[in-house]
Length: 140
Image 1 (cartoon, rainbow, N blue to C red):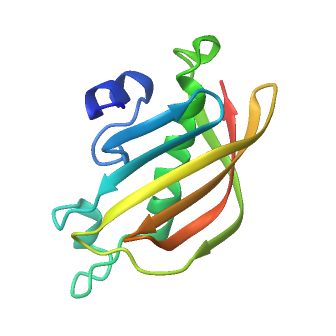
Image 2: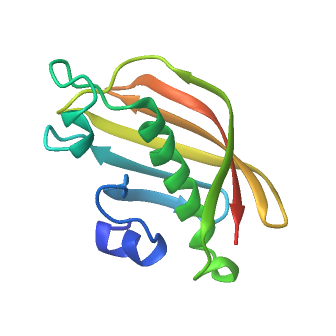
């Protein structure tokens, strides 16, 4: 399990762009599980439907990408490197994420060739899928 302090040692992201609160499980280079607690105090709610706050879908996708980066960048051969989101495919947003939700995240690295990889991610709230898709990344 990784706390937010340990996550910050792996990822360069900081508020308001650090989208992972805790990592519960990592299989190095293969998969990771973590979560983000969605708070009413999130800065993006001020401008994204303020009267009906909804977490932007692209930020859910970013949270999945950050979790994938943690799975890869935790490996000894990638320590100190950066992970870059370079594409997304087959992405579907199925339900809205609102303040008070706990966004459960899972990503499985399905392909890695050199510095380029693909992860298949799923985000759920209360066991219901809110977002899923393939995320392409580059390690540099």
